[in-house]
Image 1: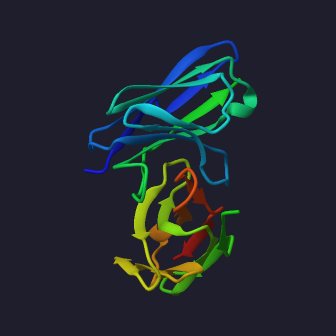
Image 2: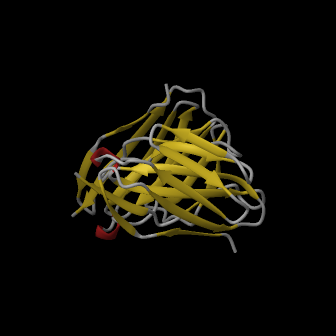
Length: 113
Length: 111
């Protein structure tokens, strides 16, 4: 089983709202990732967790706050977003950080109004 | 600087018309090259990993090959359900071990 699940599938939020995106995998992978993808562009890395510790934050604004409660779960907390943050948010996991393919979830389509 | 370039940007094929997609890369030591398929509004679906020049992988109508400078994704006798964007990504041996994605090839197979 190579499934990564994400909830919700769609999210519409105002600029003053607080919401969270959730991601789960049960493959025993020790690395998990958040990506942002705009239309007709490749995925853009936001955060990397390795063994439940944040190892990379690609200069993402503080209105995005990641959390890794355990090795199977990854959250992305959203607060005071801007309309330009509207995008497809993808979660991925891999057995380890190095030399392995990443498996992506279906994504959350986020619209900020 | 690490770079990945995919061509063509878009490709239209008749059903059954075989072709190849190209992924050219420049990295400071290749750790792995990955091919993904992505349908509109969905997450990328993993297809293949290639680690060294000369390596080949096959799955149904798809075959991926790797040289020291580029990778090809060969599509044999494509069907309309093969229509998707195909993404290539590389991981370098140095640096942060992130995946560098190309901008993709948007494939349309016409019945």
